[in-house]
Length: 230
Image (cartoon, rainbow, N blue to C red):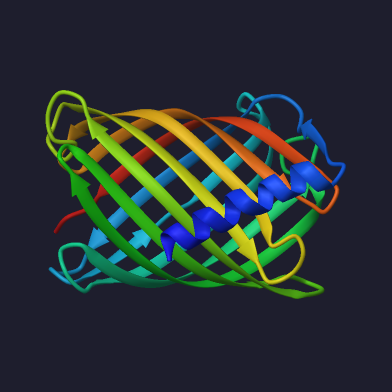
């Protein structure tokens, strides 16, 4: 499944570049993408994840988008888990801090499959997520696939005082044209302060595709990850 998605992505992008006239444009200045990830284990199998995000057009200025998400997950094995969740996604008019009117007020339901594997020190994480998107005037389906790589630098990434590199590529597929709607690429450095607390800082590029153009925007990313044990 993973190989099929990646092959499909590469082929479609090559066809687009070779046989159509497309424009590639950067969307303004470098913005910020702020993430709080709070994992709450309920027992050995079940957990709740709270995952709010906040975006700005400029460096901690002109905030225009936020998302509030929550999921309930179930661990099938040490390497495989499933989850269901919901979220609220609000986009404001660009050009100011939460500038009215609101452009998009979206509710989503989603189901996901998450599995991991290791190659020596490298940890590979794969997430497949199916979204049902409810907007004011229409409804959309979307499939997301994210491949995440973690490389420990001085000790295992789950240990206190560990440093680690993180990179991911997330692909967005839709059931309408263009079938590939977006691609997010990220690379960053993480530091685990303690077992329940870790920080990440990195750089991301978000591509959005349409039939005639490719737009992208760059973000400085700051993440706080918490594991709230009993």
